[in-house]
Amino acid sequence: MTNQILHTLDEESVQSVQRLHRQELRARLELMERGGYAGAHADEQARPVTVPTGFAELDAALPGGGWPVGAITELMPEAQGIGELSLLMPALAHLSRAGRYLAWIAPPCLPYPPALVQHGLALERVLIVQTHDARSVLWAAEQVLRCAAIGAVLAWPEAPLDDRRVRRLQLAAEAGGSCGWLYRPPAAAQQPSPAALRLKLKSIEGGLHVDIHKARGRRAHALVVHPAAALCA
Image (tube, rainbow, N blue to C red):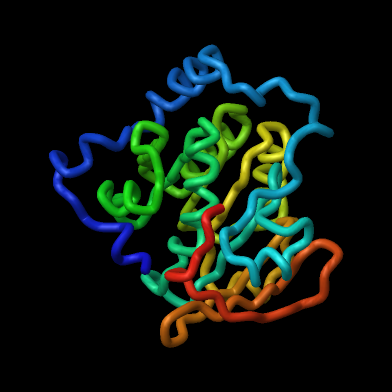
């Protein structure tokens, strides 16, 4: 569950995870771009359309059979700490093994390194971007999404988002070819959004109730996912 992945840690405990402030971010992204990534300059038509979720029942319910690549997915959990991060762990491990970086923008708590390793993430591929205000969260998310070396961006925007801001992030994800996940409050489901995929999440015994609120080319659908039963993505 999420509370096994996110912890409030002291500095020594997170020394293996790369933490960046806004002023350091741009230089680091430029360095990563120069360092290259095998698929960074691939033709857009050659990019994978999706990344497997690691859950057979969820893959079967999603367009293309997984998390959309080059797109924004909105996750709207009923509360923090119900397992909403566990839902992403197989895909993050898949991207990490492929040599992509994983960026966490303004997480409510810091990732717990032993839990990330247990889930198959390479700590040297994990970037934590710390911000000081709501505007910085969106700025950092847009910058990181545009970087081809980044495979996944997880962001926790504090301020309400309108269509224009989500659309900017969607365009950035398309440009960089990454998977973008935005954690938003449940009330956001009442508002329209240009995000490619929108999921509402509720905790049930032993798993998550996933309500597919919006998916391109699919009708609304609901299913139960058990994070402990994840397949190797």
